[in-house]
Amino acid sequence: MASAAVTERCKKNKNLLEWLDSIILAVAVLSLVFTFAARAIRVDGHSMDPTLHDQQLLIINSLPYQPSHGDIVVIDAYTPHGQTLIKRVIGVAGDTIDIDFTTGTVYRNGEALDEPYTAEPTYTRLDMTFPVTVPEGTIFVMGDNRNNSKDSRSPMVGPLERSMIKGHVRAVVFPFGSMRWLDG
Image (cartoon, rainbow, N blue to C red):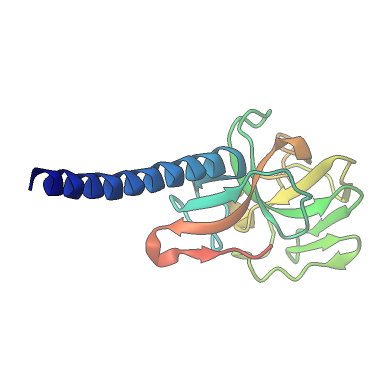
């Protein structure tokens, strides 16, 4: 009888150890992913309305990548503008950006952009002289809420070094009612 009880206890402990191993492995994998490949970041402000909203929690891909037109990126806070920025890539190296502030139309390489994601046309100048050609190794970014956004139109921000990109926004994960993957 005593040997049957010991055998039963060993089976229960073995099952418990298998569960514990699985949990430890899952935590280790998630730790590696969130350390090297993905990060969570919170939106602070309204410069990306209506696409992203204040206090939403985002998942960003923090692996190096080649930014493309339309991508939403997170710019590191350790830059001259002094704060983390979440903005949309409007231009990459070699693109010429121009803005008609009367009509609110943004042009890239002479073509008007179709921007259904913006809150309203771009009427706010922010002291940058246009047209501007995006220098090599930099990107030109703007918020989707163009008239309430500190972005590359400001000489304080300007075109940003690609090395300042902290990550590429991939998903909104909180609040749960607004969870979604983002294109681009």
